[in-house]
Amino acid sequence: MASGETDMASGETTWHQEKQTWHQEKQTWHQEKQDMASGETDMASGETDMASGETDMASGETDMASGETDMAHEKQTWHQETSSLHLEQRTWHQEKRTWHQEKRTWHQEKRTWYQEKQEWHQEKQEWHQEKQEWHQEKRTWHQEKRTWHQEK
Image (cartoon, rainbow, N blue to C red; front, side, top):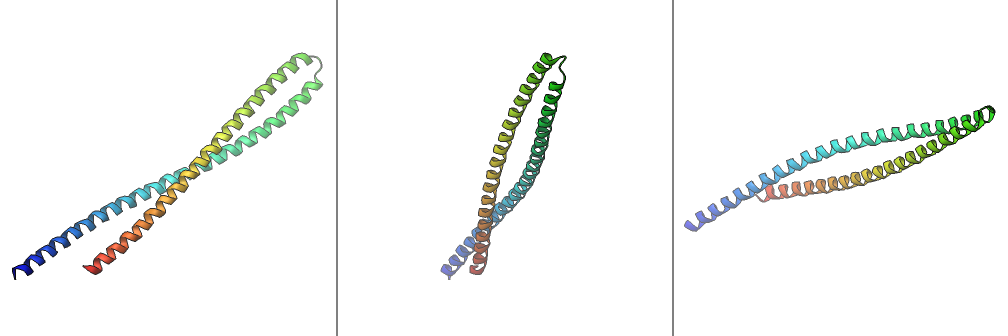
């Protein structure tokens, strides 16, 4: 009789320990769920930032095309104005050098932006991979929970 009571007490202790472990796993799962929601918000913010960057780049393309047109017009005007040819020629060349420098700077900024965009996409892929792994862990945890309830 005493052996049966000891077995019952031992089984009850084991059951309480398993219940406590299950509650701890449930709390961990809820924390991970909150972390994933925060990650979703961060990714949406990144999408917005990238869209803004796309708009900025398109605006830069338009500005560069306008600059090309402006340079062509200035060159034509320079040829027509003979009275101050040498002064205007020097001015035009300086503006052309400045414009080319601005164009090089813009292209560098564009390369930097594309690099940042690639890095952001890499981070997004890594985040999606972590999200998939988390969902797999969630499915495994639910399966273990069902198994535990069936064994209980």
